[in-house]
Image (cartoon, rainbow, N blue to C red; front, side, top):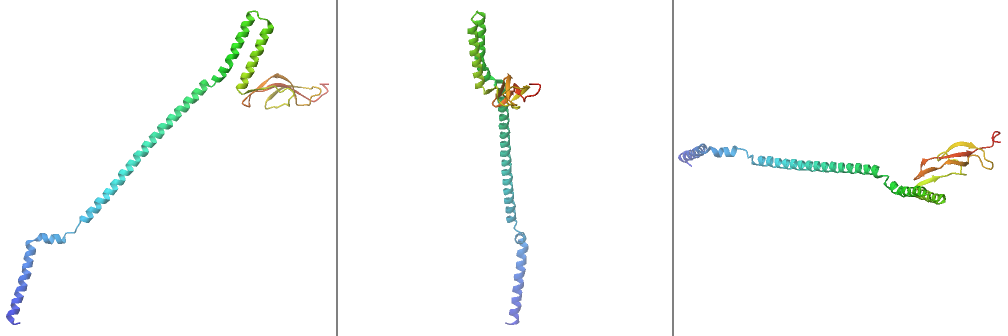
Length: 209
């Protein structure tokens, strides 16, 4: 290659460089496109996170609302149970003696018949028979009401069921035995309602002899 050829090659190279610089100056947006970072991926990531977070918040709010409604329902049901229980207790107090009243009404009827018979001049034996029948009806009524009679004659003294009025020596009776009943006692479902008033035998003393 001669000197002229080298000069021409250098001129062409310089022309190419100059053309490239002119193209860059005439299209600055291309340069910006290359230099600007791609934020599209970051924007998408942020949007997805916000969507997930919003979904979780909505789910928690719905759950909170459900729990609140369940709590209100439970409270209302508890109030209803309390009201029903109070009503049942009130009814029990008010009508608890209904069975007893039904049981004793026939006794009143029988006594009224006895009084009417006495006023009409009925014989004493007939009146006594009527009262005996009434007494039996009354005893049967107490039995149906689970009332048990305590008539502890000749039984060992029981301080849980008997009340000793006095002691008395009775020949042939060991000490601590009920020898006389002033007033019968009663149990209701095995619970003491009234103790029997009794006289209890004692050991022989100089005074009793």
